[in-house]
Structures are given as structure tokens and as C-alpha cells.
Image (cartoon, rainbow, N blue to C red; front, side):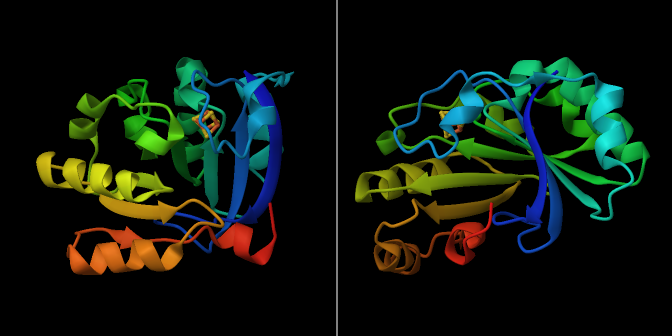
Amino acid sequence: MKIVEIFTSLQGEGISSGYPTIFIRLAGCNLSCSYCDTPASRIGGEELSVPEVCDRVIQEKPAYICITGGEPLLQSAEVALLAERLSAGGKRVSIETNGTMPFETVLPHASVCMDVKCPSSGEKSDLTLLHALRPLDSVKFVVGTGEDLAYAEDIIRRYPIQAEVFISPVYGTDYQLVASYILIHNLPARMQLQLHKFIGIP
Ligand code: SF4
């Protein structure tokens, strides 16, 4: 599998925000979001086998492992096997996806965070995937504009989402606007700020 980097930091987002986490960043992406903060992950990468990746992380102390990208599910067969082995080794595995690729094969061994692309990203997720999410999974809307917030609300209201829903302002945008919108519209969603960006860690 193509790996861009493996590093340890605090998880900055989602259900396990704040926990020490090993990040495995995979190469390649099928989208080109306007605000992409990991453009280097869309190209290149080092070829490592699943056992080689396991060897690098399984003895490390953090219990949480986040497989991210890029779009990790472009390598879904390897990701499913990796998640299975890490889970069997006692790790708590999560997979971040841009919501354009099926993820059923990874569900037995990992939680999934589906990033639903909003209009300002310039991209679109496959909303039919939302039905496969479970209560231990999550949905993230990265919002940069009022139009994005209205889009997120429309989806939250129309789709029976079992997963936890997060609304995450693009770093450096108007956080008060997002907070006010969630309050005024009483959205069944949690606002989150990207912890790692505020404290300046990877
Ligand atoms: S899906 Fe993620 S990695 Fe791919 S272009 Fe969008 S923000 Fe960047």
C-alpha cells in the first residue's frame, strides 16, 4: 500500500478527539477540494506491505489508530486487511473517508468518519453511503460559508443518519457564524474546532 507518512499526535477531530493517536496517511485522492490541507498526500507515497505497516505501529503505545489520506479507500482491500490486523492486535481503528467510495469491507474492524463534501469544497460525496453508517461511526461537514451550513442542515434533516454528526468550520473562518447557526436552527449536531490546528501540532 502507498503510505505518505506515519506519525503520532493528538486526534484533533471527531469522536476520539484529544486522544493520543497514530496516524497512517495513505497516498492518493480522487477529489480536489478547494481547502485541501494535505495536498502532498494526493501524490507519491512509499510502498509498504500491510505487515510492514503493522510492524511499525502495533508496538507503539497509543491505542487509537486513524487511517487517513488522501482517500484511504482507494486502497480498500489493503485498508480492510490492515484494520483487521490492527484491531486483532488491540488497537481502536478509525478510517477517514471523503464519502465517495463504499466502505462496507472495513466496517467489521473499524469505525468510519465520512466527510460529506459541502458546496464550497467544489466536490460532492455520495449521499447514498450515509445509510451504511452505524452509531459508532461519524459524519463530518466541513463548512466554510452560509451556503455550506444550509446544505449540511438539509442533509441532516432529510437522511436518517445513525452516526454522530459533527459540523467543523474551515480553520480561519467565522466560528461565531457556525455556532449561531447550530443554535438558532437547533441542529442535532456537535460543533467541533480542529484542535490540532489551534495548538499547532500535526
Ligand atoms: S478529500 Fe481530503 S485529501 Fe482529497 S482533496 Fe479533499 S481534503 Fe484533500
